[in-house]
Amino acid sequence: MITTLSLQEAQSDNPLEKILLPPTDPNAEVQEIPGYKLVYADGACPRNYRVYKGDSMIGVIFQHITHWSNAVDKIRYAKPVDAAVGLDDFMNVARVSTTATGEPPTEEELFDKEFDALTSDEWERLRKYVPQAKHLVTA
Image (cartoon, rainbow, N blue to C red; front, side):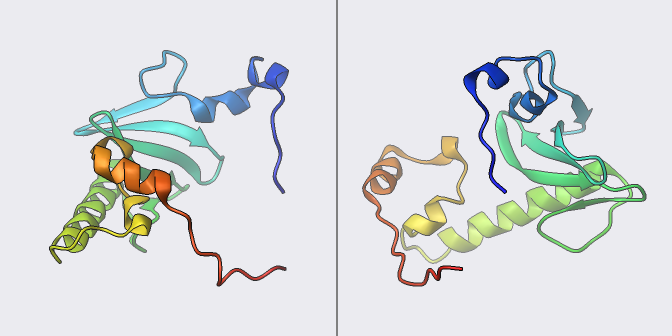
């Protein structure tokens, strides 16, 4: 189900706004761990946290009752820092594997890059990009 918020709801003190807060916002629920900031996004079990390294969001990790996990491997971590490092390592390997070929990344690969890591030429390529929808099937 997709819901949209009205302008009035978006400006209210609704807790749904919490998912939009950056880590620098004084109302954001932020956990500082060595090298990373975890910003609570939503959820109860698991709780979802956006992971920031410096000023860039690198992905999402999840706090379960008994462990932590991330979306890139099937490992259960005892500490949030381990889940964040596992996510960061995966993202670094993914970046290296796409640039190791020596060919420019495809537009689909550019969508996976951090916004602040895109060059002006890559932004221009994405601006002109029209995705091919030949494999979409209606339900």
